[in-house]
Length: 108
Image (tube, rainbow, N blue to C red; front, side, top):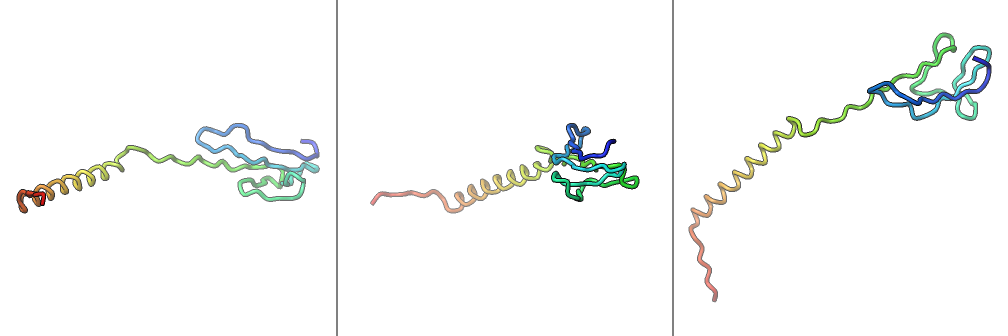
């Protein structure tokens, strides 16, 4: 690679990985690579490292986040608890009505 200032942009990521959204800037001088910012000033990147005596740029692949499963067995507990509470409320309401007897309201 010729001496100069370069920009590395990722246009496609492997399946299951997150694409690198920020560009990586670097300079090449007599075969040695130096990481820089877009203004050419020396910079370090959290997901990039230099290897082979500063001749190779290695960018870490970041796996994509797993999405939560929806409608799976995690919701079954909520359905059971909701059903038990509803049935319990109905039983208590019926039992209370039977104990207290019918109510007769009269207009005065």
